[in-house]
Amino acid sequence: MSPSARRLVLWISAPLLTFTLVGSLLNKVTADQDTYPHLSVFQDVVRHISSNYVEKADMDKVMAGAMHGLVEGLDPDSAILTAEQVKQVETSAALPTGDIGLDLTRQYYLRVIASRDNSPAARAGIRTGDYVRLIGDTPTRDMSVFEGMRRLRGAPGTKISLTIIRGSTQDPHIVELTREATPTVDVTSKIVAPGIGYVRVAAVGPRTADQAKAQVAELTKNGATKLIVDVRRASGGSLDGGLALARLFVAKGTLASRETRGSQPVVVAAATGDGAVTQPTTVLIDNGTSGAAELFASALLGNSRADLIGEHTIGRAGTQKLVRLPDGTGLWLTSTRFLTPSGTPLHEKGLEPTVPVNEPDVEFGQSPTTDPILDKALERLEVKKAA
Image (cartoon, rainbow, N blue to C red):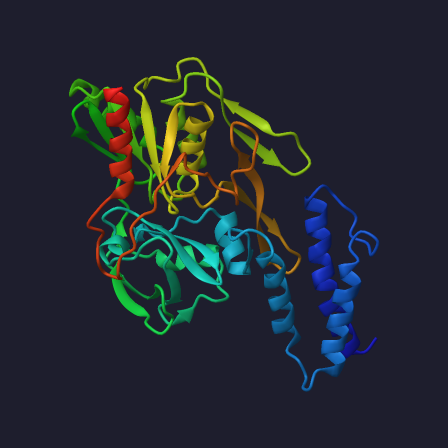
C-alpha cells in the first residue's frame, strides 16, 4: 500500500473509530452501516475531499473540524479535548486560583451564563446573555466551554482581556479584567420587610448549605417568618451541593433523579433529618440560574416548597466524563443528566417560573435601577400575609 493510500485509510478510519467508541459508550450499539448509514456518506465526503477538492486539502485540519462538528451537535458542555487537556483531566491538575467570576456556555460564540456577585466581570458590567467574542486575541467561535473556562483562570493579580458583544456586533466592548481569588462566602442575608428574610446565594459550593442554614437561623432570630431565596445568576458549582441545599428545605419526597443512558433513573430522595428550614419560601430565578442552583429550585418547586418567580432557567444539569481516543485526544461527554422530581428532563430544558417576570435590560456598563423580580416576590408575600 502506498504512503498516500495509508494516509487516506487513516483519515477515514479515525472518525470511524470515534463513532465506534461513542456507539459503544451509548449502550454499546454496533457501528455498522445498517445502524449508522451516515457513516457511508461520511466516508464518501472524505474520499471526495481527498480526491476532488481544488487543492490538496490539509486532512488533519479537515478531520479536526469533523470531530468538533460531531460534538457541536450535542449539548454545549460536551467537547473534543486536546491531548494536553486530556492529561490535565487525567492528572486532576488543579486550576489556577485566580478567576474573573464568569460562567460560560456556547451559542455560536461563548456566551455568558452569569457573572458572580461583585466579581471583576460583574463590576465591569458583563451580564447574562452577553457574548464573549475574543478571549485575549483568540476568537471563541470554535472554542469549547471547557477550553474557554480554563482560559479565564490564572494567578490572582494577572490580567485578561475580553471582547464582549451585547446587541449589535458592530459595537463590541473590550474590557481588561484582573483575576481575583474566588470568594469563600457564598451566602448572605438581610431582612427586607417586616417578617420577610432575604437569602442571597451567589454560588453553590461544598459549604453553601451550612452557610445558608446559619443565615436562616440568624434571620429567624430577627423575626423572619417567610423567606425569599435568590439564586439568580448562581451558576455552576457542585450539583451535589445544590441537592444538599435543597435538603435544608425539603423534609420528604424526591429531590431529583440521575439518568444515565441504558440505565433506570436513580432517585435522590430526602432523608431523615432533612427539612430543617420550615418557613414558607419563594425562590427567585433567571436565565443565569444554572446547574446546582437549578437543582435546588427544581427540588423545592417539585415538592411544593416554593414558587419560582423570574425568568426561565438555562437547563444545565448534567455531568461529564472523559473518553480517551486512540490518538491521545479525548471526548468530554455529558454522560449523566438530572431530572426534576416529577421525572421530566431538567438538563437542556430548564425550569419555567411560577410567576414570569423579566429582568430589566440595561446598556453595557450600567446597573439596573429597579428589581422587578424581587418586587413581585415581596408583593406576593405581602398579599398572602394580608389574606
